[in-house]
Length: 130
Ligand SMILES: Cc1cc2nc3c(=O)[nH]c(=O)nc-3n(C[C@H](O)[C@H](O)[C@H](O)COP(=O)(O)O)c2cc1C
Image (tube, rainbow, N blue to C red; front, side):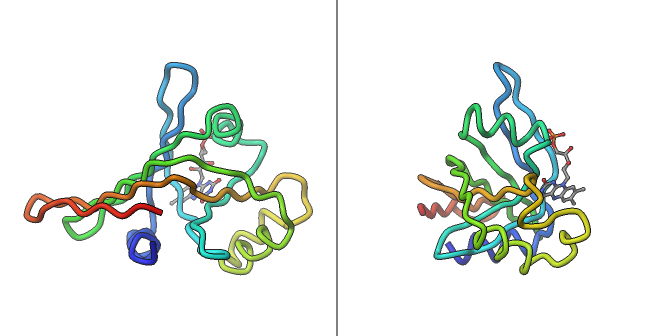
């Protein structure tokens, strides 16, 4: 899983796809943080993306860097513990201008049953499960 996180951080931006009824939705995201051995992302409860995840936790993300791309498909599970939110905000101090652990909006999710696939035009795909 570390390779997945390293790739997401190096790419800086990934694209998070959610399901909204029968309509896929996708947007840029940047948060990717390991806490207690799991891959976490961060968002705000007020956003549509959050509402979509709560309704249907199946998501996929995609990032591209230096000719390689990574897709991670899986389910997101909210971790409502304060320490999980604090860990994320400590890892991304720039978020603290907009979010705090107790604002009632900040939320973090971790991936479960994730399948990560690294692909390129020149190499065989590599799959990692976590
Ligand atoms: C480079 C980049 C990284 C971003 N990272 C995040 C993120 O990690 N979490 C988040 O909630 N929003 C992030 N955003 C903002 C979301 O893309 C934006 O709020 C989007 O509209 C949310 O999707 P929604 O409108 O479907 O709710 C980022 C935006 C950019 C441009």
